[in-house]
Image (cartoon, rainbow, N blue to C red; front, side, top):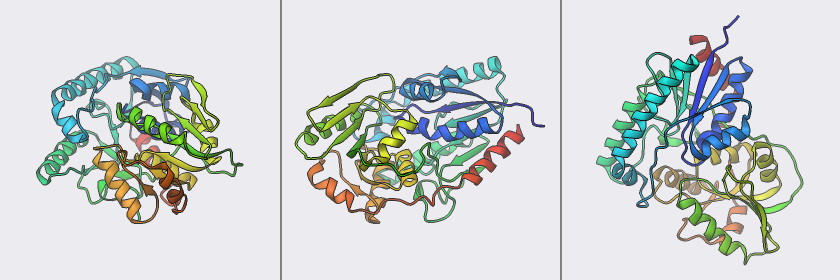
Amino acid sequence: MRRTKKILVAPLNWGLGHATRCIPIVSELQKQGAKILLASDGRALGLLKQEFPDLTLLKLPHYGITYRSNNILLNVALEAPKLARAIYQENRVIKKHIEKHQVNGIISDNRLGCFCKKVPSVFITHQIDLIAPHPFLEKTSRWINYQFINKFNECWVPDVAGEPSLSGRLSHGTSIKGIKYLGALSRLENKILGKKYDVIVVLSGPEPQRTKLEKGILAQAKKLPYRFLIIQGKPEQRDHFFIGKNIEVKSFLRAEELNEALLSSDLFIGRTGYSSLMDLAKLQKSALLIPTPGQTEQEYLGNRLSANGIFHIQTQDALNLKKGIPAALATGGLGDWYFDEPKMKTVINQFLDSL
């Protein structure tokens, strides 16, 4: 009989997607007998507290990257000293948690400092080969990313290994060691519910872009003949109010509530975040997607999906809900063939057995 293993799961606090896609990982770890500790900061930690109120929560240093420009790689470059310091502090904190809580293994979703040579560690990402607007910058950023990922024993990709894939060249054709494809991950389940809303808007991502998108959508939604539900992506708040007769606003919904709200809506509006795409594939929903300005990964995914007629894409600066909603409703959406639950269970079982 396998001895109970303590696993520290640490998602990045950059939007809520890293935390939400860790939920099925945590649930499966629990099913396989592991004891879980959750570590993050900010809204990601708040979401984990909502979903797993009985688990131990540990706070990690905030990376503190702010949007000085509409280019995420430029932002990271400008704040490289701050980022390097945060990663160093994060690694020190993780080592202390490992000693104090006698952790047997670490699963980090894009937290670069969450590893320790004393225990096996896993890095979860769909972005191995980063995309940049200039070949030299792309080559350099990929090399740096490889150096960090290779500090971990394994790299888990929430996608299928072959084509058609969801992440495309972001995580295929790479030379990273210890790579394992889990299949897509989503905390949601597909079922049939009656219609309640025409459009559900789920806001996410780093500030100030999250707020800019919210303001842009609200200004246009007031003038349209659709019933909207807007989820602000603020797990630290409990707001629920109406704007006019057609717009309902909630600060946050837990997984089951969000699941039902999505299924009772005709159309999803939100970012081209990878976790959102996995949720849309699980529920097979139509969507109008708006990539976060300057996030090359989201722009790449948006262009790829738009070119294949899967979703309708608009830029934040050219947002036009009057035209975009009908166009999005006419698209096909994603299927659920990206999911491979037996593979995910096997990978987690192998990891626990190795500890």
